[in-house]
Image 1: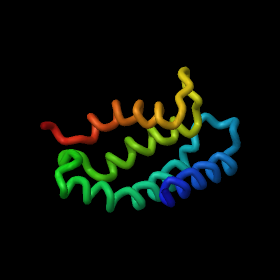
Image 2: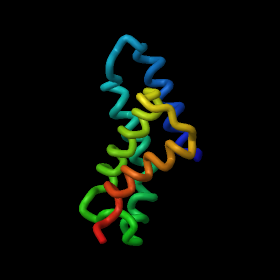
Image 3: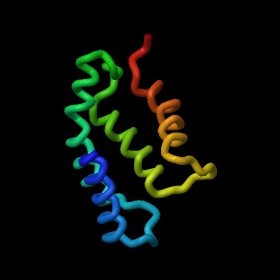
Length: 103
């Protein structure tokens, strides 16, 4: 939960620094990715060692994918409103197959 709050705080700081007129936060996205990858790497490496995550994808690639999805969820309402449980089910339905090793 602390990592998630740090990500949200970092994203808000990036948006505040760059202003809403820009369509991307390109320069700040590298710093945000670095922070996120550093926070996620131990969890991702542990998941790979336990066979819970694909071994053919690097922890940085996992971090990039999950960061992109997280930022999208944080910055855009989306066409369908979902409460927390529905959003968790939605993300699990699509993200789990992308991260899980083949059976």
